[in-house]
Length: 290
Image (cartoon, rainbow, N blue to C red; front, side, top):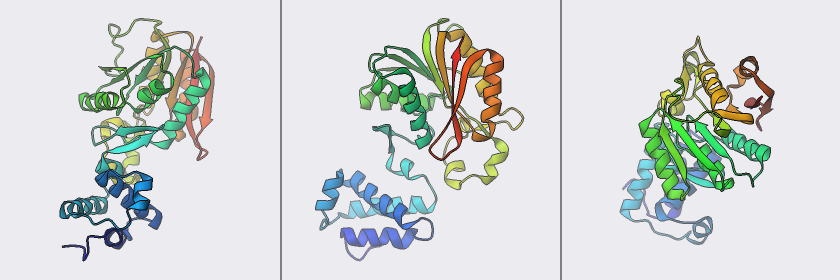
């Protein structure tokens, strides 16, 4: 066996010995704790109380698999199959992007802007795992939330998340770059949000292996010559679908924040605002349909 003993201390040491050249001590400690919690169905308090636990051979094989996949730089969220997003457990795998902290900040800005007691018609474009739509529905419980994505695989994952969370979101397959007038009625939404693909292909070479090799390129990249293609298409669609004085929110590429702002102003939006994330990067935009 790859560990001398089947104790928690032996497994923890195995994680540190095999991963110390890849990750920080803090990261490895998190990987170990979350792997044990996931495998054994432990809470944080269970983990503290079960220090003398003995793992089965099946458990040990699971932990070895986790370590090997981490050595291969596979995202930890894909390995354990879930992540936390806005106090929700979101299942995630290679069918959709891993929800990011900055996207949580976008949801928080939306909630702050509209209030928690509003009853709204909401549309999330390029929904992926469904994390934005589901987070909004979990807070704005009286609102009707719809979400679209071009990927049938991503939509299957989003629907599973909605089912597991018991949240009623209406998911539809749609190409964000095509204005399908027959899907939604004009002037029917109070709020549209999107975290679309926005990374130029030329940036792929400088990105982390765990992103480029595992997360879906369809949801990440755009052509170098048209980095704002999704923002333009979605904003134009929003002009038709939003009610007057209603809002659109985007997650942004920090390098194209000002150009995206200029774009939505040129299209006719008003009160355009860019917001910095907690890292000080220009990552969010809000605008109002006149």
